[in-house]
Structures are given as C-alpha cells and as structure tokens.
Image 1 (cartoon, rainbow, N blue to C red):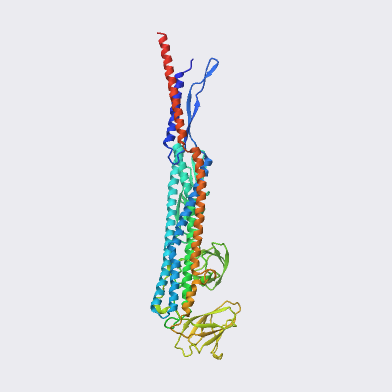
Image 2 (image 1 turned 120 degrees about the vertical axis):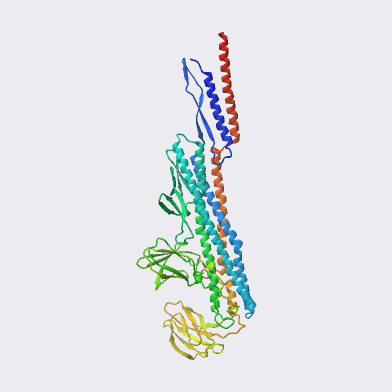
Amino acid sequence: MAIDLLNIARSGVMAAQSQMGVTSNNIANANTVGYHRQVAEQSSLGSQQIGSSFYGTGTYVSDVKRVYNEYAARELRIGQTSMSGAETRYSKMNEMDQLFSQIGAMVPASLNDFFTSINNVGDLPTDLGMRNNMLSSAGQVANSLNQMQSHLDSQMKQTNAQIGAVADRINEISTELANINLEIMKSPGADSQLLDRQDALILELSEYSEVNVIPLDNGAKSVMLGGSVMLVSGEVAMQVGTTTGDPFSNEPRLTTSTGNSTLVIDGSKLGGQLGELFNFRDQTLIPASQELGQLALGVADAFNQMQQNGFDLDGNIGSNIFTDINDSSMAAGRVGAYSTNTGDANLKVNIDDVGQLTGSAYELSFTAPNTYELKDTQTGKVEPLTLNGNQLEGGNGFSIEIDAGSFADGDRFEIRPNAGAAAGLNVAMTDPRGIAAAGPNISADSGNSGNTSVKLTDIDRTHASFPETGSELTVKIDTAKNTFQVLDANGAIVGAEKSFTPPQIDTGFGFSFEINDSSSAGVTDSYSFDLSFAEGDNSNAVAMAQLADANIMNNGSTTLTGVFEGTKLDIGSKTQAAAVSLASNDAMYQQAYNRVQSESGVNLDEEAANLMRFQQSYQASARIMTTAQQMFDSLLSSVR
C-alpha cells in the first residue's frame, strides 16, 4: 500500500474549486439586499495506516454555511420597526404641520379680516356697503373652516388607505413566508437562498409591525405581529384586513383571520408603520378635527348671541349671522353607537354652553337600572349624568337628548360634541340690514345677587308702553317664586305681579326676555330696560369687535383665534418631537445594521484575498497531480 498522490491532489483541487465558487458567489452578491455571506467548511479525509505511521488522504468541503447571528438579526428587526414607525410618525406629523402652518393660515387671517369689517360697521353703522363687506368677511371665515375640515377629511381618507395598503402587503408577505416554510420543511438541508429570502421578508415585515419570530424544529419559522397576533404558523398563513369602524364607520379597524374565524385587533399596539398610522389617526387627526369644530361652534355661537343682544337697521332684534350651533348641518357625527349595543336608543347631542366645550371626545355608558356615566377619552375622568325627562345633563357644555328608543344594560356610545361643526358652518344671513349694530340699554340693579343674567328674545315697538328713553321700565324678578313685577322710571308699579315659566318672561309691555339663574335657592333681582333705537347707534357692533380679545373659549381661558393657534402649536410640538425621535431611532438602526453587516455582510477586500488564496491552493494541488504523473512516467521508463 502506498500514498495515493493523485487522489490527494484531486481532493485538493475539488476543495479549492468549491472554496473559489463560494467566494465568487459572495463577491457577485456583495450588493444583493438581504444576502448573507457564505463560508465553505473544509475538513480532512480519514487517514490511512502504512506500517506504523498514519498518512492523510486529502480533504473535502463538509458544508457551506450562511454567516448568520440570530441575536443580531433580532436587534436589526427591532431597530427596523422603531425607525419605520418614527419615519411614519414624522411624515404624517410633518404633513399636518404644513397644513396648519401654510393652508391653515387662512383661518386666523379670515377671523382678523372679519373683526376689521365689524370695526368698519361700528364706524359707519348705517352704511350698507360696510355691512355687505361684513357679511362677505363672515363668509370667508366659514369658507376657511370648511376648507380646513376638507383637508383634514382628506388626511383621514389617505391614512385609512395607507392602513389598507399595509395590510395588503402584510398578507402578501405572510403567504410567501408560509410557502418558504413549506419548501424548507421538504428540503433535507438548509437552502441559503431560501433562508435569505425568508429573512428579507421578515425584515420587511418588521417595517410594518413589531415582529416576533419563533424558530421551529423543522427549520421553518412562525411569525407573530405585535407579540400577540399569529401571522404565520409553519406552512399556514393568516390574513390581516380592515373592517368598518365602530362606532364611526369612517375609522376602519384592523382584523386578523384564519379560516372562518375573524378577530378585531388594536392596530395602535402593533408598532411600526401600522401602529403609527393608527396612533396618528386616533391621537392627532381626530382631536385636531374636534378642536377645529370647537372653533366653528365658538364663532357661530358668539356672533349669533351678539346678534340677539342688539337691534338691526329696522330696529328688530338681530337674527343669526351663522348657522345655528344645534342645526342638523352643524351636528352631524356627534354621536356614534357601538355595534355591541342591544338597546335601540337614538341620541342627539345639544350644545348648551360653547365656552365649556373642550376638544375631547367622551364615552357614554349605561348600567341598569339607571346609571349613566360619561368618560373623557383623553383624561379618563368619569362624570355621572342625570336623567331629566329625556335629557341627560352634566356634560361639559352639552346635554344628550334621548330622541327615541331606550337604553339596555351595557350600551355604549361615543360622544363628539364638536364633530361636523367646521364642515357645517355657513352664513345664514343674506340681508345686510339684519346686522345688529345697535344695542339696547339693559342695566342690572346695583343690589342684584350676581347670579342672574337676561337676554332679549322679542320686541314690539308698536306697543303703547314700549320702554324707550324717558319711559324706561324696570322688571323685578323673584326666581324663587317664579314671579315678576314691572315698575316705571319713577319706581311706581305699572304691572301687577305675574307668574312666569322659566326661563321666558313676557312683560306685557312689548318685549320679552329670558332669565338665567345660577343660584340654588332663587333670588330677587331687578333689571331696567331702555329699548330705544337710533340708526346711528353702534354699541352692539363695538361689543362684537371686542370678541377678538375676549377669552370666551375653554372655560374663559382662550380667545377664538387662540383655539386654532393652540391646535397649531400642539401639532408643531409633536412634529418637532417626531423629528428628534426619527434621528434617535435612525442612529439605533444604523448601529444594528452595521453589526449585522460586520458579521454577515460581504467584505470585497477580504473576499478578494480569499480568492487569491484559494487560487494558489488550486494551483498547488494541480501541481501535485503533475508531479505524481511525472513520477509515474519515470517509474514506467525505468522498467522498459
């Protein structure tokens, strides 16, 4: 027995050729996304014994492996999810910031123009041209709010479309991952190309949602979204989709399904693009729309009330400039009933005090037999409501009317008092003579309690005892007994004590008014009425103009313009925070990516050096074969 030089040389040539093949493949795929560097593991063939010594018999490539670090890959997926979510958050917030900073600039500008036109009417209260300009400016205010709401609605549609598109792509990935799992389970060995494709798909999936990967014994991988939603189990692919929103249909929810089973899941908790799209819609877009609606209600209510406090050019009590705040066009979308309700209650929300409104939404819940609770969805604060007839009272500036039907135990509704207002706001007045620039002179007695206020509701100037200058009338009101008495300018009683049904009082002297009493036990207060009218009177127009600086919103803490500026500031702050978060998450992602590349990426310099080394090995093994052949030939020649 002798050493087989030819077989040893052949094994060396084959091994070097395999090494060069693997190296060449690495070089060729240096720029292939998702490719993991491969290495050929080389081992010695079994030795043979000749005499008392053991001699090697050559080499072989025992395996070709992917250079893969599961921990580094997991870290990269986490970094990808965070960065993708941060990119989505910044992109959406930047769109909103641009909307409010650029297009939204027309809202405060139109309000300022409106107040300027009111001041012009105050300067020339009988000028029809100035009055026409004021109505035109009012139309610009309504139009600017309508347009802003339209842009927010477009953002809502775009965000919902993005959610649907992401869900569709997730389904494509889940199907492909299940097919790859099936191929891996069929194959006795690990196909690096399949594994690379599998990892690339999982990494892409981590852009859309947080991903948990569960390796299986058969080489396949199960995948979960957000740590709780199974997407791929072996060769079985589940599907995600969207379904109609509940309680508002234009806010679709996310579902997961397998076979005939469908489950609604909370998309905001999935992370990645999907989670940020839901968070943007629910935590930024909808609240911004609510606050815009709050501004629209504030504008309509403030100027409509001022109109009711004054006289138009014909001496009548002013009519509404803008749509009434409880008109159906302003109230669309204030109530949403959950699909799980078993009762048939049909609710209507009425705005009672715009100044108490916030941008919040509320959840109304009913527990039998008679517990009604209102939960602020932003603060979590729960307030009990009182059922008074068919009205639920106790809301922040609004009441809920049970229009029809009845509650069942466990019924829930979402209440959005400001919904629909910005889209429904319009100018109701068409005749400029209707602007109430003049104002009545209603004075409270110095001894009044401070718990009451009055508002004119009707006048008849043809009444013989109508109170004009020199013939003012004083009305003494007892809200404990719900009675009133009328006295003349000298304090003499001119009308017997009469009863009234709160809040309306008809004096019988050509005018009626409402009284608002905030006391608990009732008071006795007096008000003097001088309802004379002069065409040149501008007192009510001056009072209207003062609304520009009046803190009439958010419980007396904010002006009309301040409501919009507050929303704009909040969005700008969120956008800046999103930019900081994006930079931070990008740095973390790059760190994880560099770690993966340092282990699994292709280094062309290293591969070029390997190529030269294996080429030399190949040439050396080939030289052995040549040497062996020459020795064999010499041996044959020696015996001829």
